[in-house]
Image (tube, each protein chain N blue to C red):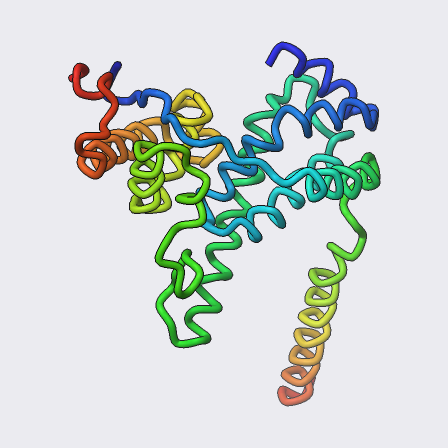
Amino acid sequence: MDDEPAWTAGLRRGDAAAFDAVFAAYRRRIFAYLVRMTRRRDVAEDLVQDVFLRLAQHGTRLQPDTRLGAWLFTVAHRLVVSWTRAQGVRAQLAGDLPSHEPAGSARSPLDALADTEAQRALERALAALSPAHREVALLVGVEGLAPSEVAAILDLKPEAVRQRLARARAELAAALGDFTPAAWRTSA
Amino acid sequence: MSSDDLPPLPLAPLDLDAARAAAIAARARAALGHGPPARRWLEPIAVAVFVVIVLAWAALKIASLLGL
């Protein structure tokens, strides 16, 4: 975003207006990513708070050339990893298999928000992906980040991101069937 | 579109409700420029002190067993 250098400079000074501008620009994107990764709106609300708390706490130590979007998604990704690990430990302690879905939820909470059947199909197809593939699909397909940026966020090699992306795309196309976007069918 | 690309996924937009968003912004704004809370370091320091004490005790015990 064009305003990012000014926002970063403001955050380095501890400027509340700069923080508000970053929060307004990124809160929906970070929240949507967290909801779709955790499949839990309540968890996503807590994690989005943690993301912006960390921005506030670390803002004065940002580098002048920090890319705020990448920084925020890196923090969000790490929080999702921590939450997923904690879920796994809790499930083991309870003698259950790890699950990202609240018990007894036949319908995803995202289904209720989708406006069209195509969006519902896409939400279900995304939910069926492994978390690693879903994350890459969200960061590239929704956030519009380049595979090289995603590699930096996820601390992976760009080649690994490309492989995950190709698999995610194939799995999404297979799951979407008639709802597969036309652009996917015409490209090889 | 190349094989390492993905077209935009037309998903429904998601957002926090306004009250929750305002509460999060206010809480984060209050922490602006304060750095991470000091209690973040409490646990690692406590663990480090405990480990040092145990190691020192073990070293003294071994030394006394060896008659040093």
